[in-house]
Image 1 (cartoon, one colour):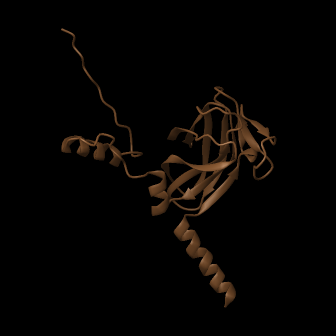
Image 2 (cartoon, rainbow, N blue to C red; image 1 turned 180 degrees about the vertical axis):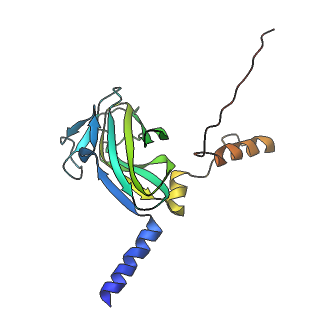
Length: 193
């Protein structure tokens, strides 16, 4: 009856929209960041405040139910007028996810980290570290990735040079295709003689 329909509806919504698990910053392990409540609009019992240029870190203990690709969404605010605020996200001590800037916003807003992590079912740690600027982290969401979220987190690449050659376009496409799958490195030998 009605209950069965509601359960089916919720299962359909979760599978289409990507299931999110919310983790409050004030409940995480804070290293240098301070638990605060002065900037209004937060959820839960407070937020973690990052101080400019001090590499404060918030470590979240998370648990995912199944192997898969996950996106990290941050809910944050910038109480100061600083427009040069950046953070990085790492996971499970050896996994680097991203480093990026935050868009200015005095009110709390959400932004996806600009990469996707493959996580096996079980417990993991997510480390959010402030690289520069003062900002407030309210919570993170760990979101199971579907096609819509994948396109949001990893939008189609746009080559700035409209006059690029076919060879340049092919190289750009290749570099984009390996994003998040490893490390691209190179070496240049320069001989001044």
